[in-house]
Image 1: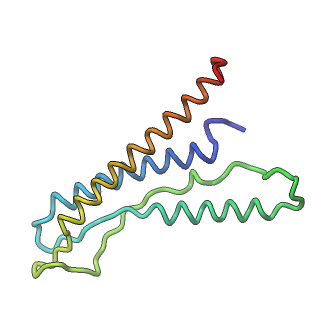
Image 2: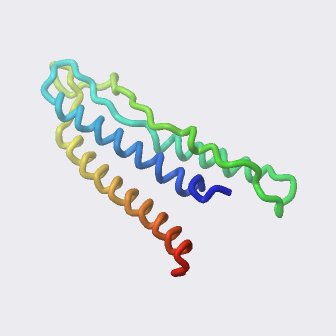
Length: 136
């Protein structure tokens, strides 16, 4: 098994990519808070990731014997963050649906999420380095 393609590392890397994309989407929303008829965008990722993890878990549960190892790498690398537009709401007369307070809260939450993911990836690689150097 490739230690750089483990389920944990692939999930962390893809989640970090999603956090970057979400940050860009939130910044785009904030920049257009006063643009008439602008509809906010967001990133669909967490539900896709959860579904992929559930499929992976179900596939592993389909082994012919409980002591058999699952075959093949997880397909989590196929889960990609996707931008979507919220067209079904309007907060103002000009049909704009961006709420600056909601966006600023989401920006703060996403920044914290990004920081935690970056730290987890750093710790993961630090653990690999410790093993290589024999400091375990």
